[in-house]
Image 1 (cartoon, rainbow, N blue to C red):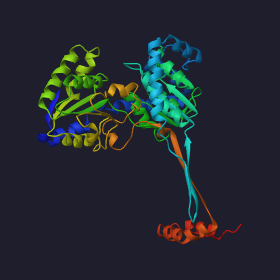
Image 2: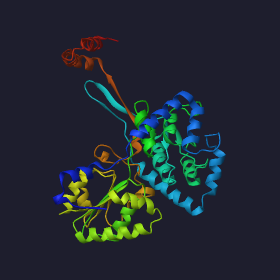
Image 3: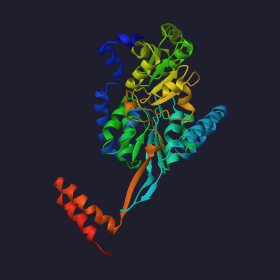
Image 4: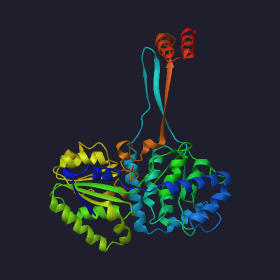
Amino acid sequence: MLTYDLKNLSKGDRSRLLSRADVDLSRPLAVARTVIDRVREGGDQALLACAQEYDSFVGRDLRVSSTAIKAARKRVPEDLMRAMVICKERIERFHSLQRFEPFEFRDDIGVFGQKVVPLDRIGIYVPGGTASYASSVFMACVPARVAGVKEIVMCTPARGGKIGDAVLAAADMCGVDEVYSVGGAQSIAAMAYGTELIRPVKKIVGPGGAFVTAAKLLVRNDCEIDFLAGPSEVLLVADDRADPRVLAAEMLAQLEHDPLARAVLMSTSTRVLATAAKELRKLTSSAPRRDIVEQSSKEGAVFIRASSISEAVRFANEYAPEHLVLDVASPKAAFKAITNAGSVFLGRYSSVAFGDYCAGPNHILPTKGVASMRSSLSTYDFLKTVPYQALTRPGASKLVKTTELMSCAEGLPGHALAAAMRGKVRM
C-alpha cells in the first residue's frame, strides 16, 4: 500500500501514479505475432493446435454446437438465470437510448444527409482465465444487437474442453450466431483473418489478458477493434462522511481482478484514509482471492490526501480512471467538473459492482488514462455513418470557383476540372 499527500506530491511520484504500472507487452507481442502467423498460414489445423497448446483444449471440434449451448442453459440454476435476465434487460434498456440518428437537410446547393448503418459481422472475446465472465457476454453483445449487427461470433477459451454454463447461457440469450472454444491470440487471428471454419469479422471487442491485448494491437490495421484493455482500476473520491469500510470493500473489488489492478482512494480526511487502509488489510486477510489481492495491494492500493474535493476532482481528470467513484455529500456538483472517466458512480450507494453486472451502463471501459480520449463500449461502436450529398446544377455551379481556388492551391488541378465539368452539365 502506498500513501501520498497530493499537495506535496513530487513530480516523480505524480508521474508514476498517472502512468500506472502496466503489463510488459514485449514478450506477449512476440508470441502473439508468431501465433497470428501460424493461424493465417495454417488455418483450422493451426488454430486447433494453438487451442490445445495454449488453452489446454481437449477434443477436435472448436465450434460449440447449438445442442451443447441449449444443454448448458438448462443446467444454470434458476436463481442465476433470473439474475441474468435482469442484467440483460437493464443493459438493453440503457443501450437502446444510445443511437446515431440519420438526418437530411436542403440548402441552395442541394440535399445533404447522413445514413446510419450497422456493422454486418462482429467478433466478441470473452475471457476465461481466473473467472467466468457471463456479464462480459451481455456487455459486448447487447449493444451490438441494439445497433442492428446481423452476425455475432464469440470466442472464449475452454479449459479442458469446457466453457462455463453461464457464459453459454448468456450467449444463447443474446442470440450469438457462432461460439468457438478458442481463446488467446489464436482466436483474435481467426476472427480477424478467418480460417476454413471461422469467417472473418469486421470488428473485435471485449477485454482479455496480455496476449489478447497484444494480438488486438497487431491486427488492428486489418480488423477494427474497440481498444486495448489494461489492468482493472478504480479511483475513489471521498469526503469526511464516507464510510471507510465501504471504501475498503470497493477497493478490494478492483484489486481482486488481477495482480496489476489499481485502487486509488483520495480523501480530504486523514481519518477516512487511515481507517480505510486498516479495513482493507482486514478484508484482504480473509479474501477468497487473497493471493491476488496481496500482490495487487503492494503497488496498486494507493491512499492520497487532498486538501479539497475540487483538488481531488482535478487530479481525477488528470488520472482519467476506468471507474470513478464520487462518494461525497454533493456528487452531482462534483460530477459537473468531471471530463475524463470511463464510467462514474455517484453518491453513497453506487458501487462499481452494480455497474459490472446489472446497473445498465457498459463495463467494457478504457483503462490507463485512455478515458481522456475514448468512451466506454457502446451501441455507437457497432454503427457507421455514411454521409451523402446530391447537388443541383445551380448549386454545383456556385461551388466551382471555391473548389477551383482550393484545389489549385493544393496542387491538384484535376479536381478543379472535375468540378467545372459538373457545373456545366445539362440534362
